[in-house]
Image (cartoon, rainbow, N blue to C red; front, side):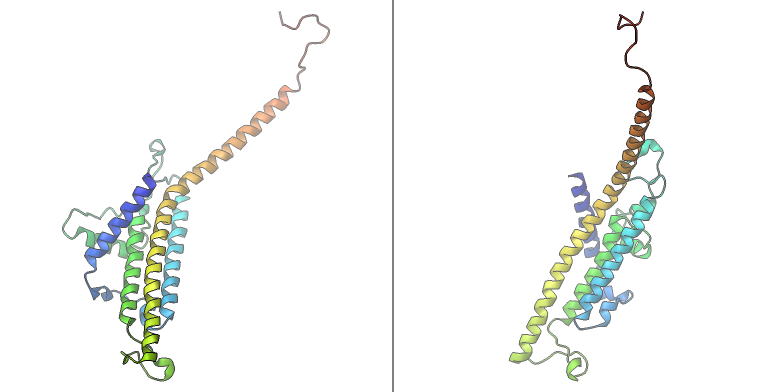
Length: 241
């Protein structure tokens, strides 16, 4: 339940931040993504490739940090002997209580791509997703004539044939927007849980290794003890006196 609550808090906080920041198409003030450079179906492939790369990089960075000596999970202290890497936490500069604090924190997360906390990863991935949905929404209701020699994409008259083509394309766009949202939510939840579970898994692995060593030592001791006779010879008593 605690893990689920953390996931929900992270996602809700991220969505609220993004809602405050993105009130319109000012989102396009930032650098252009590859999927924003095309108006055909390849935009979908480029978006999913970009998101896949983003999360692969975040998972790889998380594993590298969590394998560092002394790095602990968020709830662990190791009796004060461990240090929790700041890259796994919300940036210290974030002050949500301050004026425009959410927007400033969002910008901090975007600028500091080395921060791999669930909150910052949510901000970075949601930024890409929102830009993707806005781009697809601009494509809706249009058709690309480039393959037919018609030049650039333009709004088309509603004829039966063209209308069916536009409707089919719009349906695919709506479907991909919804599926992409679900995939993003699940991936963020999995990432958040991974940051908690991986250190625990690592500790369990260390415990198992120690138990194996303990078992082998006991085996060695038993081998030495077995060298002694289990009964006394040439005696009528079973007890020492």
